[in-house]
Length: 241
Image (cartoon, rainbow, N blue to C red; front, side):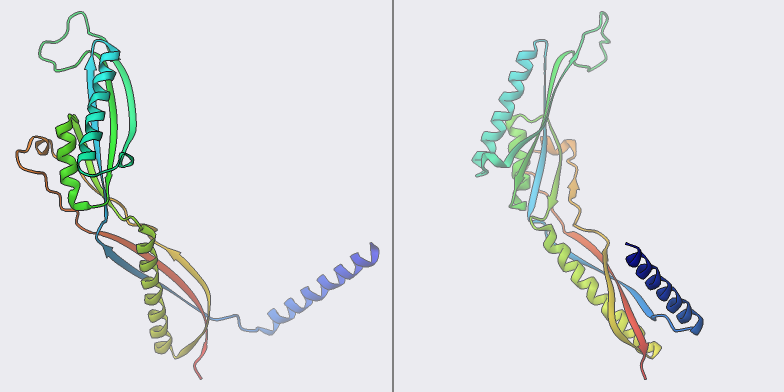
């Protein structure tokens, strides 16, 4: 144990002496060049999600819940008529609240009294041009609200990788241009650090109230989605000559 400790102390002393000698000799540190590349890619969305709200009110909680379920079942049936499977219809929220009637209700108020059942349903469709038809089918089934339509990519990571590759290429081109202008050469890459957005954000469209009572079929333009990326490169550089 004593021999090992002596060897360890000797090694540490030798390392400290070498480090001090190097500092005193003024040996140059590694010269570096750091650049950040930016890029973005645009993709057409290939999946749409329509969010419906179903609200029913009755003095009897059972009747309010039953009426709500009836509309939800009708909505699922309407989606089946569009060729959508039951798995495309998902209940994302459900609640029951009681609002007692006051002794002297305000006749000018449109407040509902009794038991109110609220349900949120999302319908996912992979043909974005059918989002409008999904909206119309849900409204026809008795949905009391359309919370919005969101457009996404089924493979968001594919767009992310494409943006990162383009950002990396941008960083490389910047480094080459700067190295040439500074008359230095790029020796090797010391680090690669990705950054920026990791996936395209969904494009959300709120439905205007008038859309629910429109006499013509609902049409929705999905537009495009953009994902941005950054990549930071650090190079070791040396004199060109």
